[in-house]
Length: 147
Image (cartoon, rainbow, N blue to C red; front, side):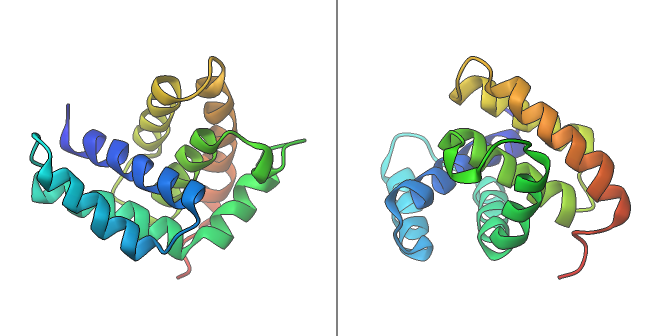
């Protein structure tokens, strides 16, 4: 598995925990990485670093990200979306809007693959449809670039 793909998968696990447990993200991050170190698989520093960039970026910009997702998810409230779908889209939106070095197609493709792997039967289609709209309308306008 490629390093950034692995980082996105770990970031999804972290965001899922934050979303479900409603605990302090800093404490969850620390405990999560400690659990990874105690496990049989070692996580490369660059993988952990990119996962932390995604998680911290999503949490820092969550109001803006959630607002954008909600505006493109017709007839869907964010709180009614599956936790996996919601967090996959948050991650991809962060990459699309705030990380210029990642091509939109890569962010969307990685998000769709995560949704298919961890979500419901139609999660991939759902995530793809919303992220495609966001990419076309928001990324081109530079709406997310302001810090």
